Image (cartoon, rainbow over all chains, first blue to last red; front, side, top):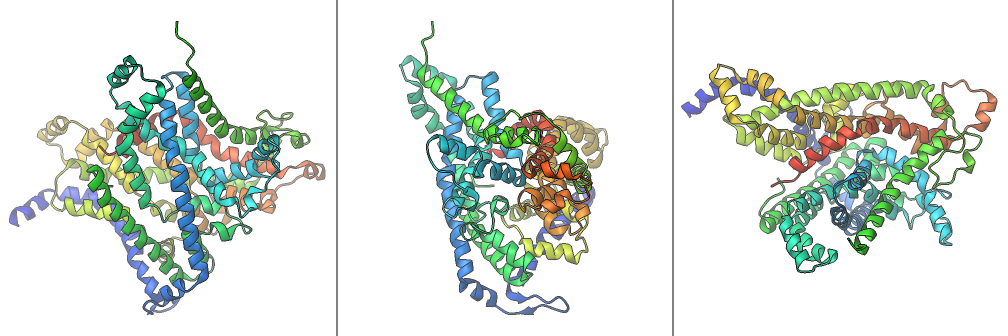
Length: 297
Length: 291
């Protein structure tokens, strides 16, 4: 104890250096987290908030609007998991077949690019490309399919979310897999070639098994963010005609909280999302530890 | 002689089609923004070569006072924000990566807790309101003064600096602050470059907090104005404060004006893209993947 105190006195400069960072986290993270007790209160502009117990949660769970939002969140996240998750793996396998050189550089530079564009910009690009006489519909007409107004079509808008997310992130997300592939010893491939293995066989029996642990880790990490469903994306691609199909938890919180000013009620929805998210992250952390030997952090 | 490799050519072709699917929508907007407004109707959704050639869309957009102002605002927020990010992140990363102090474990657990539980956007908003930070740039900058993920990446970089260098300085009587400023920081230039780009791209692209925290239009960054044009389809704001002749108004094409605004928002990223590729990719490979 005395020793610890002495060391603390010696290291005083370290605490001074750490102070700004900790102060920042306390004010801008811890305080608003504690502030989420608002979910159990009624918000008052003047004077103290009053405690109301689980009132907001009861309203929330008996509200059809909230149930729809919850459904949308789960559906959109699940669609993304199923249809987007495998793409970066496939892309990495394909890129790996391209020898280092200008073509490989070209493919990588182009496929990483959308990751750096904001969702506002991507929404602008996609709204233009998907409009009734935009590029996609020209391709559709070429195959004698009728033009579609994707952005206002309730049947297609979720696919717009899936494909625009794929467009944005597949290239960038392939980096992790490419890095893992590059760690595979080239002698394995040489031996396989000597035995007459085709490109496909090499992929199937050498590359894919070597990627297994990265695949599991990334999948588990994604699971931890399941409840997010991509707020920035939905926020920018949503419009009144399709809102019933794409309104997710975060856009709902934004609308009822920040636009309608129902702060306490919206905080209850946030807290619900946060707790589910926390359970998922902790759950995946322990799953990950169990299956891959390393945790999420 | 090598025989023609079928599977390889199929793979090359698939990859080429993927890159076209990424590039064509972007290049189509570039072509639209540079087309002659009287001929832009001829441009199809797949064309990447402008019809005619004109800078008129850019001239109009860049003479809109709101846009001009917002570009300046974005540059300001990005520069100041990134500087503050780097300062806070590096200072904390040094203490956590290179030293052993009483309570270090507690701090690390605290940071992980920060990482796994995000506050609600509602209580964050109310906090900014209580601190009287609404409608100030401080709210945007302080909202994410340190990104925990980036802090961990920088810690990993700092940990790679050879202990012997730091030991030598300590023997010469240098204190922690001296070691930080004259040894660790100069040796970490690539790491700091990576973080500068991480944070810089974040600030340049940020629009949501600006949308909810900044009520005064004159303080808006470019992304918020852009969103007003392309997502909200607010054409009035786009033309507000412009002195256009009736002939000009007759040929104006809003889609082309939107396209040029989008391109303006992307240009800084494209200019930095070679650097971004170099540092981001390395940063993600080293820091993002856990070994």
